[in-house]
Image 1: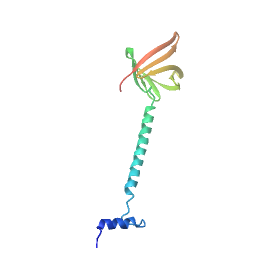
Image 2: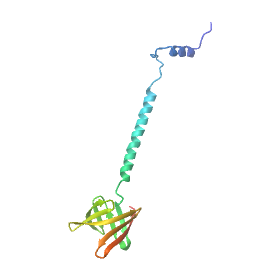
Image 3: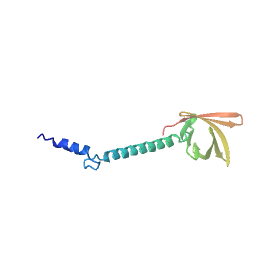
Image 4: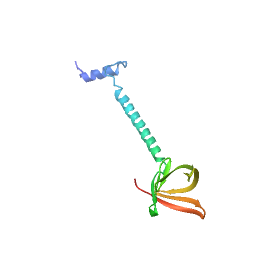
Amino acid sequence: MNRKSDFDIVDFIISHSDGRSVRKKSKLPRILLCVILGVLIIGICVLSAIWSVSSKQNRLFGTWSASGGVTMTINDKNITINGKTSEYIIEEKNVIAIKMNNEYYKIIYKLDGDSLTLTIPDESGVSELKYTRKSD
């Protein structure tokens, strides 16, 4: 009598079983893979959200210097020029209003990379002040 190897008999039993076989493949690797992919996708979404928020930070924020030693620092609420601090608000896309003596004075600004140009109306027309971003 020709005897089949044990492996062949096991394969035969598994192939003819009704799905309740002890040697049924485990779903754990597939579930684990799904969990890992889910965590990676959530991680990418969180990093993307953080990057998006940081890239939307106001480009005006920082410390700026002009010729003649004038230094200006801008944060989310205040603007400090040579040690004197005032509140400011952004009125339009390229217009800020600085509060001085309980009144707001509008100033047009233009950002070009690390260069900031302020256009200030005065009695003689307008004055332009050019600033360069200082590295923090």
